Amino acid sequence: MSHDLARENRQLRDQLKQLIANAQKNQQILQRHQRLDLQLISADSFQALFDTLFSTFPETAGLDIVTLGLIDGQYDIRRILVQLEVNLSELPQLIFLQDESEYGDLSGQLHKPMLGAYSEERFGMMFPEPLAPPASAAIVPLRRHTRLIGTLNLGSNDPERFMPNMSTDFIEHMASIAAICVENVINNERLKHIGLTDPLTGVNNRRYLERRLLEEIGRSRRQQTPLSCMYMDIDHFKQINDRIGHQAGDEVLRGVAGRIKAELRLSDSLGRFGGEEFVVLLTDTEREDAVNVAERIRQSIAEQPLVLASGEALNVTISVGVAGLLPAMADEAVETTSQHLVARADHALYEAKALGRNRVVVES
Image (cartoon, rainbow, N blue to C red; front, side, top):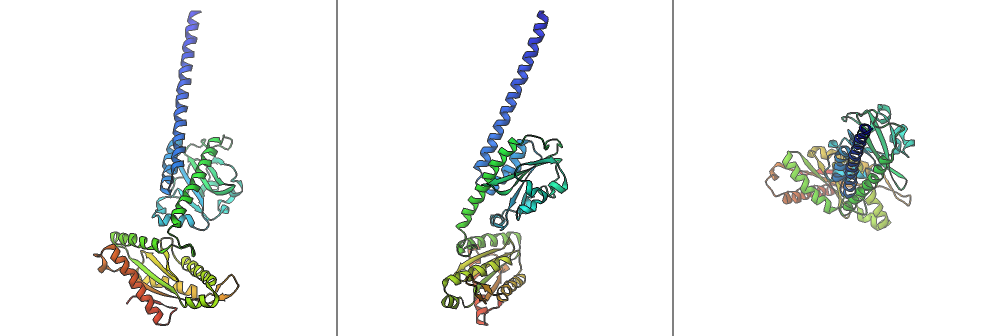
């Protein structure tokens, strides 16, 4: 009898040790997830958010890959990232979609997490090359005020990690925090961006462009790459204001800015320099190629009238001066080079106006 009791006591002690060990392990897991929550909540920039989602989160949750899909129909987020000099090609885990329909067959089901074995047809766009496809995946909707802003996409090399019948409480908790943090970071970066944006046209302001000029000249010198500048002016803009009013003039400014922007790459910078003047920086662009871009912009404005809110179709033209960064400027201070580059483009602009307007002139 005593032998049986001793054996039973040993079994109970072993079970108690196992329970204590499991409790300690669960406590450690809980503490790691709490730290992850705090790290996400404290993210105040895109870089901090991406580091947490793409590095800390997979390590904490035992995942092999995490990607983030963001709906960005107006390219607002992408433009901010480019202006922050975030190299999107180095972030394959970051995926942009124009609207919810790009989720394909999943678009009508994104009111709850979608779990299951990985298939290219179903989950492929959320784990694009060069990322290795997982064995199982969870596509978790990120919603703010019922609006879908994107998805958090979790992948595991364990085919049984994400099964359709498993509980999604933890995943949904993570998604709710991630959605708030993603929205907060986007809004925070937008607020920073507002201070560098012209409120009338929505393009960059002079302050931003002057700062960007210094950065791009420095980069061009370091990497030995070309840089071109275009100075643009709306022809006879004072006559437009005098004839049809300042409100219509504002519409013209917005319309011209929109057409210029439509012809540029994400890496290019457009800014309103004052009044009816715009300046564009074309990175990695030789002066001759910049002339082609300028001519394309000029044609897009001249060949199609701007339709105002009143219904009036208004013919508008612009004049453009083009200048490029010169090797002889390499020994100048960056600030001096910046001033000279803009001044040379401005001088070419005045030549274009003297020659009759509605034309592109490259510095002589």
